[in-house]
Length: 365
Image (cartoon, rainbow, N blue to C red; front, side, top):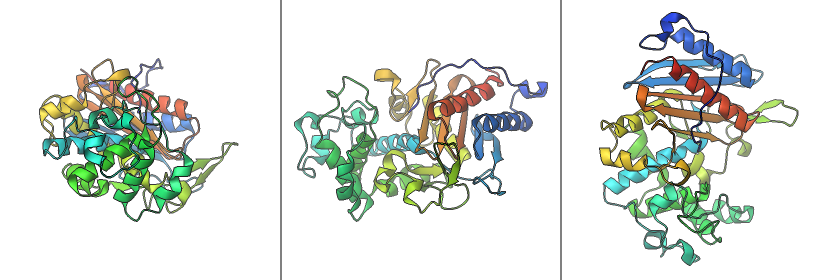
């Protein structure tokens, strides 16, 4: 999760016509080319959603280092921890259906399924988990992974991961600190699965991906097309086969960070959230969108980070990919962007965020 910051940067040199009611494709393409050159990565993809439709899609570079195969406008990229925003939307659907409540507790939902549940977690709520205030450890110990990976189903792996997280001492007293936690989202996923009787993967497909027609979505790295890259200490890049264990995080982390989609679909998803804040979203009730985008400690919303302009954003990376999405209510615009290699994680993320701000600055209020 990224929290919105403001950047100082030189303005884009764009045709004067691009400063009108919409962005011109040439201006978007120029900005995307410049960003890829600055980042020195093989490929980049960006989409602009505005007022209910995709206004521009731009790509530059190649699908894999050393290849002549160009990135195509509909190529999926891994979105990493932006997946948590989909988990939040799924939780909201289940709350609206009455299968869970925002204040459903871990003890209430999972108490009979997890024998090692520590008492400190019993009263932690679904909402606490989604805004990273459950006190759950940031990452699981490596020693817990073998018992998780031998489980035969996605739901079994999520429950095993939740059990490992909930048997570890808290990182903080719940609701006193915001501690970013991948395992916290696995606990939330296990709660959703327990309440609905389906795997997180089936639930998110039926309740978020299909209703919003996010047709490019998949779990794990894209099986074909763009490749993620491993960056060596000397800066060289190695494209990764999506079937390789090195290509992504372990499969049990899917609810926290293993979805892929193209940038137009990511922008559509965030666009529905932006519509929802103004009362016209398609997926959820208006009050539910407001609940998702209410800020808690350190500007954490439910699956998003909040900003001073009333907007929200998120980012995700597994070290092989990096994605960023930014929603700006004043201009009713969403900009999503992803790259297929990461050289300097924080600086690269800052550059993508600055790219989004640069393009948004070309639009009128």
